[in-house]
Amino acid sequence: MIPHWKENDVTVDGARFHYYRTGDGSKPALVLAHGFSDNGLCWLPVARDLEAEYDVILPDARGHGKSQRVQTGEVVDHTRDLAGILQVLGLERPILGGHSMGASVSAALAARWPERVGALILEDPVWRDSAPEPEKKEPQPNPWFEWLQTLPNQSIEEVMAYGRAGNPTWAEIEIRPWAESKKQFDPNILKAAPSNWVWREIARAITCPVLLITAEVEKGAIVPAETAREAQELNGRVRVVHIPGAGHNIRRENYPAYMKVVREFLGSVSQ
Image 1: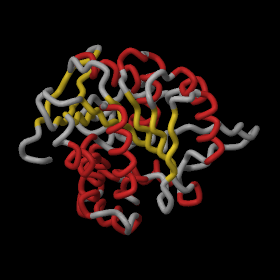
Image 2: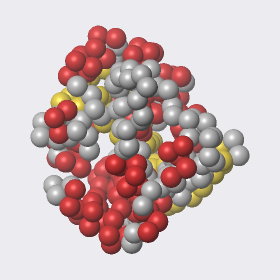
Image 3: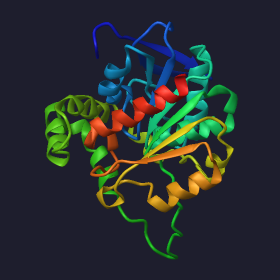
């Protein structure tokens, strides 16, 4: 963490949530919600580059980072959790940004409580249609989930080496926060009831400006061009920017292009 940044905990509905913050409330608030198995400090490069203009808040979601652990079978509502964090911190209509799970959570929050959000930046949210489950077929193992459950037996250096090997184009500044987030990850969340994000209903209900950042599905991105087009048709406030050459981790794989479109969007909604 940057030395002059702050970190603290807040309590929401009896649960403890950790967060990092670059400012003191004197600048416009920008809240960045991380993806599944990441933590708030996985936004380190973005927060560092935007802290001169924004008070950047980086919360750890439930079961992630230093936030509340998860009880087996617990129903986890990340959207309500994030809404509670905004309320406890006294943030009025901040800009919300998110990646993957965090983007879906931010969009759902804006749909459920439109008065609480000023604008949205969505980096490849989990906006896809669920495929029907084949009948009488055992669920297939998920190698990623299986690897996450081996982490207690790995050193931080081993996890960092795994991250470098699997993501050779990432800047080195990304690797340690990513690895630390994996060591902090609570595997009980894999057994928690999943969130139900019906993306079309969410996209239709949002009333603030939205930047939807997409990338190459062939490289692992989630949101295909047809989904992005449909989101725009459902809601004229949605602006779509496609970043070539990147997969699901758009900002980590093409950081200059990502920051260019984010800064342009922030400039348009901050005027």
